[in-house]
Length: 406
Ligand code: T4K
Image (cartoon, rainbow, N blue to C red; front, side, top):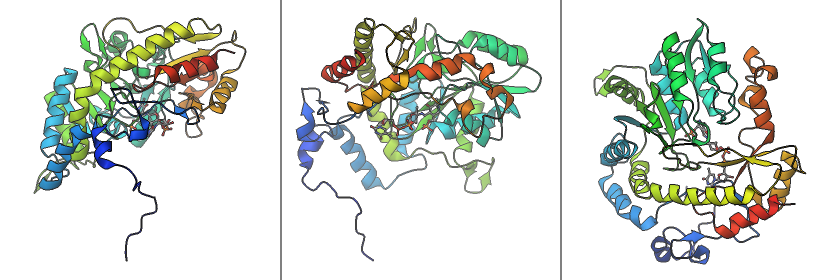
């Protein structure tokens, strides 16, 4: 049988120019840095993946093509893991195929059993990883300023049945890591940080990924740093790095020894090569995000009824997202504003609404009750994330701001 493609390949693309322009078709190219401008009849999404110039990747792809080493820890895997550890300034990194599997492996290795305290204000993957690992999520309310798990509520929720903590550095803003460490130490439970949003974020002491027993990054297309899909587990010790390393490749030590019951969470050579190239550009991506963040802050400050989160203090931020809170002083409800933006092609997103605790598979547990999570409920009903990605042009950003004015 002959293969007949079900999509139309863009035969008219001038591939030489496409590669020269860094993966941007000629008709979309504006300016010397290769920023694209979306025509106003096109949607402006909440995010858009940052990609390096394609010509930087091509020699690595040619090398992979000729070597035929596509997976199972080839030289790009080795190089990316080493360069990533050096960029992040953390000693023990294990690459994985996505953050969800990374969380699963870290939870498995952490020794948690039964109930685990976590936040309801996150992407559903956070709690699903717990459930898939055979653990039982117990929801704890969040802090209204950081949108992260509230240490006071965390301490209140602690009892002898709790076997671990899974907080999230939501939108790349650091949790109160010191208070969480004190609580975890006092109750002798491990902490796995969901750091899916926290690539490159530092506090005064260095990378925030050094906190907790494990921290798990996502390199999904929508993240500050992407390898299309991907992720990494940051471990505290050589011992846990070794065991996560084994768990991500079926527990196989060598041809005749299988030491652990693992699964397949490997990152392939294509993604690792892309990761190496992306590392050269990620500081620029973050810098451009910072400029967009500063412009939003200046322009939204003038609009009554829209509240922004205070910039995180100290260290280095990554400007993962730009959430606003639509408060009673604003003439439209959050949902009405979202619909107005969408009607004009701006696809802002309600991250995170509904709360995880309101989803059918979680809502019946006692900790999911609305009265247990008043802050998360309030934030979830008023939050809207505006477009935030390095290629967002000033003109498109201005278009978003004009729509926020009424
Ligand atoms: N923990 C946390 C706290 C997380 O936020 C996530 C993922 C995870 C764990 C799990 O990480 P991974 O296992 O995925 O590594 C998106 C992402 O799909 C999801 O990865 C992310 N969190 C979550 C916050 O956002 P959706 O359902 O909103 O994605 P989607 O497809 O609607 O994309 C959002 C926008 O991005 C689109 O409107 C357009 C743009 N986009 C997206 C993709 C995938 C592109 O322009 N190109 C693309 O290829 O969940």
